[in-house]
Structure formats: structure tokens, C-alpha cells
Amino acid sequence: MVLSRKIFEKLGLALILMGTVIVCLGIVQGKYGAKKHVELQKSHKILDARVKQLQERKDFLSLEITRIKNSENYATKVYKEKYKAKEPGEVLEIHD
Image (cartoon, rainbow, N blue to C red; front, side, top):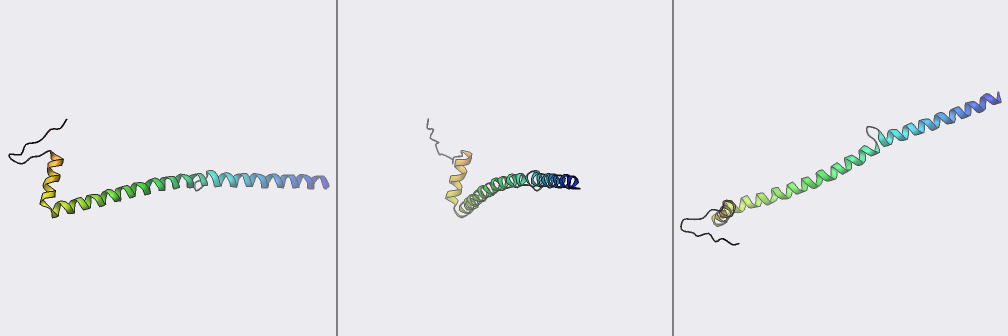
């Protein structure tokens, strides 16, 4: 009886150990595990940075549109710079 009890205790300990290992692996590598969580955090930071960058670009372009709408001189300046345009009789200076 004593021998079978020792075997039973060792078997129980082995099962508990195996269960613990399985749970730990599930936490680290499972569908919702720690590894996936870290990957998602990295992706989230990258996306946050991109959203911030796009928001800044949108704000700049909104301001630029407002300036162009409200100032004919500014609109002409932007047009000339962007399309290398000139007014009749205007001479373009070329700098090397």
C-alpha cells in the first residue's frame, strides 16, 4: 500500500508539473498570449505615430487651403512655385 501511494504522489506531481508547463506555454504562445500582446503593442505604437503624422499633415494642408482662399497674392505665389509659372512679361531668374 505504501508503494502504490508513493507512485500515486509522483504521478500527481508529474501531472501538476505538466499542467503548469502547458498553462505557461499557453500564456506565452497562445492566441491571446504575451507574445501576441507585445506584437500588438508595437503595432499600436506604429499606428499611433502614423495617425499623428497624418493629423499634422492634414492640419498643415487645411491651413494652406485657408491661406490660399483668403489671399490672392499667396495663391499666386503658391501657383508660381508649384507649377514654375510666370506672368506675361515676367522674366524667370535661373540660379545655378
